[in-house]
Amino acid sequence: MAMLEIKDLSVYYGVIQALKGISFEVNEGEVIALIGANGAGKTTTLHTVSGLIAPKSGSVIFEGQDITKTPAHKIVSMGMAHVPEGRRVFASLSVLQNLRLGAYTRNDKEEIEESLRKVYKRFPRLEERKNQPAGTLSGGEQQMLAMGRALMSNPRIILMDEPSMGLSPILVNEIFDIIKEVSAGGTTVLLVEQNAKKALSIADRGYVLETGRIVLEGKAQELLNNKSVQSAYLGE
Ligand SMILES: Nc1ncnc2c1ncn2[C@@H]1O[C@H](COP(=O)(O)OP(=O)(O)O)[C@@H](O)[C@H]1O
Ligand SMILES: [Mg+2]
Image (tube, rainbow, N blue to C red; front, side):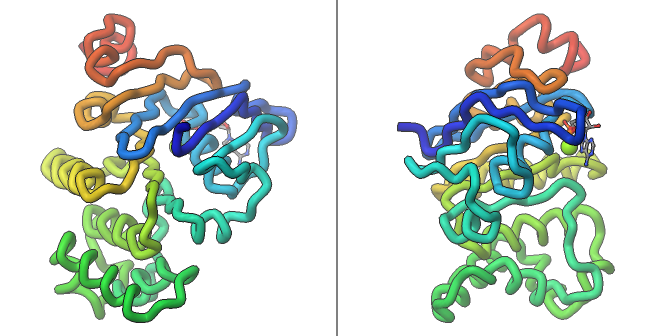
């Protein structure tokens, strides 16, 4: 059984159909890349999986449980975290306050402190800046904070929406290295990216989304070698 099963999901915004019956799976331990152009439906997919948007039809099954109608905060407590597009940190709150908000569904103080230590170990820059307002961080640091905040819920799966957006090439590499580490630490990753080359280079498998439909799927290496993927998404 897959950890996450998306079945025939259709989502509308008013009369506009953003997802046209998409199905895919994420197995435990995998890094899955969902790639596609601007407007393809990537963010809509993640919002629907994490309970922020209700689909018109179809279902989302997480660890055998149907969570299609489960509220977002409950889904977080079940072990799914979402790093939103554009980071969305709370600018006026400190780095530490932002991180603590990521643990809002948890009660055990000791375990929360342990998660905080782990996040600081992975992102030493966040510890150095823990009392600074999040709005004063650079783009790359805000992305790290958004990831750290998601990790504070101690997720079994993490959904990331365009973590490389707007970052310099060096920072993009740094963020992708961190995603690899998160994966190596045992967290399953569903990664949405316009940067298809980078995403596929760290993924096990990938899906290509085009105007609300999955048009191609396969092992990441196969997609990297695929001629139509190369011309449409890899600039080759
Ligand atoms: N809140 C919204 N209201 C109306 N249409 C939306 C909304 N959000 C997204 N859309 C539309 O849904 C489609 C998919 O958008 P989105 O999921 O954001 O794509 P992506 O993340 O791949 O760029 C686009 O056509 C977009 O214009
Ligand atoms: Mg998007």
